[in-house]
Image (cartoon, rainbow, N blue to C red; front, side):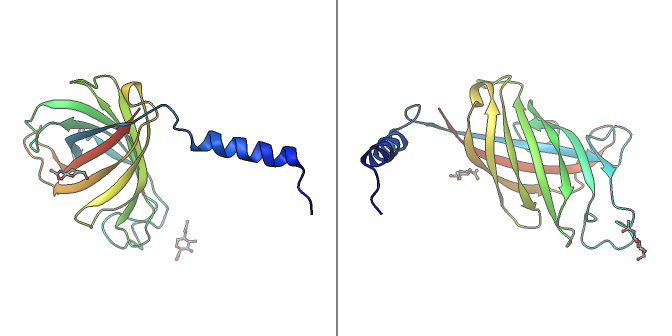
Length: 182
Ligand SMILES: *[C@@H]1O[C@H](CO)[C@@H](O)[C@H](O)[C@H]1NC(C)=O
Ligand SMILES: *[C@@H]1O[C@H](CO)[C@@H](O)[C@H](O)[C@H]1NC(C)=O
């Protein structure tokens, strides 16, 4: 079959457009912080909001399959709960693994201090939390993080270790996030 000449021209033009860099070069930024997810208290930062009727009866693993948690967590510079607060993370996680060890994490991390104050980036991925390091993709952001891409490496610092607040119980997770900004 003979392909009309104008179609080839359009095809070549669109290939050229795709090949040209969009928005110029990207700046790589690394941000590290610690997330404090507290529970089992009067004022938890993470709460269970839904679960299948049989979730606990037939539970496997640590978090019963189908459990939905909503959280509003503090982010600090250092690994302890007394460390300086420099951000806030809001989102939810759902136990999507029937093994009880894999959550689907949706998290919006807003910086409340420093050069990125008022800006946030969003991560979305499954998170097999028994692995020593979990990679979670950055899928976008607001403000200085607009159109951001990147990835976070998540590491559990400790489980049920927060007891200096109120008295509270909770987990601390290290977030080491590499962002590619325009
Ligand atoms: C819960 O388990 C019972 C017994 O195994 C079953 O009959 C019922 O359909 C289950 N309910 C749900 C909502 O899965
Ligand atoms: C943080 O992640 C970056 C990029 O993956 C890596 O080069 C760096 O060693 C990590 N830093 C720490 C303290 O783990």
